[in-house]
Image (cartoon, rainbow, N blue to C red):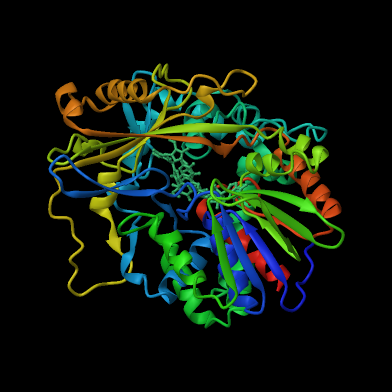
Length: 538
Ligand SMILES: Cc1cc2nc3c(=O)[nH]c(=O)nc-3n(C[C@H](O)[C@H](O)[C@H](O)COP(=O)(O)OP(=O)(O)OC[C@H]3O[C@@H](n4cnc5c(N)ncnc54)[C@H](O)[C@@H]3O)c2cc1C
Ligand SMILES: C=Cc1c2[nH]c(c1C)Cc1[nH]c(c(CCC(=O)O)c1C)Cc1[nH]c(c(C)c1CCC(=O)O)Cc1[nH]c(c(C)c1C=C)C2
């Protein structure tokens, strides 16, 4: 998201690089706002969706089964989620929208303690007592009680790691290395000792600076939000209000949708999350001035008062086009490759953003549920305090999620309810920063055989699964190479510096999107970012 973008001239030409949800939604929003603008979407792959990859295959009995080889859900409370769901409804896709409610067993999360026991993250009084009695809560009670009174940060410190902030606030490293280590491995695939507090726990970072403590800050924010809620109960957030305005939406309907979505911790789509990019791809193909070029490697060049994209693929010779504006909806590491020769200074800055690789190992057992009923939940995460020789970040219980999915729209003849419940579908996510050396440089990615063997060992330890059952399952191995940027200490300032260079070097004719540059790494974050920037160009 760039601060200053210039309004596009009539019949402008825009190039969008990246066919993930960031590029797709940006293209859709801009194409709807400015039907006169000619948009060309470039993508390395012919498949839309980027990291979203719902894979339709067959099980050992020849029955069709969908395996998620990337994201599978997204959070219900977010501006981006309102825009995604409103657009899906507009395209008559309401019937594939699925929800997980707060009281659903699929909303339970577990953390593995140092003795390989799964402990539920508290969501009730009973689970809170159990959590406080586990080794995972060492130091938590005194840490929280005295947090408000602890010395605040030295104002000279611009940014620090999540672990450093947590240790200062809670008086010991245990809380950071247990609870927060698990949570942030489950989002960033990285360790709290590496992650930027300003970027990752922004609210806590600013609360300590503004109010002197996290407790005081949370209280103040709760009080102010309560006051705002009472004063203006039907107020839309700034981004959703912008979305409603530019697309002439019925604000009462958008508010009702936003309110309904906020009941659900997470949402999904029947048939897999790929339905989301596929729907947007379908929608943009109907735009009056749209073209797409796939299987192309793209590089960026600055010409006098335009920007040009050079592209080539195995079949076609090198070609190029000039544009009034280029949108880069790609990760920082892909952006740096695009300008290595044409802009060495910017390349050097982008190239300091290293990445984490996650290996996904899916297991499907068509005729047995090996997830103990007491552990039915979204899945579990493994914090730094567990030895974890298998380097598993966490395991998502896809079959529990699927069995607890409820239609978003009430459907009369609900044919959706899953009849066969005795199956297992789960996804282990392996590696992330655990594949890196102390400088954050990637090393040993396990091959398919090693990764599957490690996950089998972890599932036997954590779920008590039998080797016979595991060996009988169908295993799928996916390497999500460089899939998540490393959001290291100082990340926000680095991005601000990079954005300044982009504005100067390309005279505001280039904008950037995607999870490395948006507010957060989630699907809703990149969609919000796409909407805001598309409206700046209209
Ligand atoms: C393992 C994993 C699990 C996740 N789970 C969740 C989750 O549960 N919930 C959630 O909200 N988010 C989740 N996310 C984050 C989510 O996947 C991202 O927010 C989202 O996919 C980012 O979309 P994007 O379009 O920004 O980038 P991408 O999906 O990376 O898409 C970028 C596209 O650009 C293409 N491209 C790159 N360089 C070029 C080039 N030079 N020329 C042409 N094309 C190019 C790529 O091929 C790709 O198709 C997860 C991410 C990962 C990696
Ligand atoms: C174990 C590794 C990972 C798991 N998911 C991811 C990793 C690296 C990646 C990821 N997961 C989520 C996001 C978006 C975050 C956001 O800001 O919306 C990303 C980048 C979603 C997510 N992950 C967890 C929760 C509770 C959420 C939010 C709900 C949602 O958006 O669906 C925690 C969590 N992640 C994993 C597990 C097993 C787990 C909890 C048990 C897998």
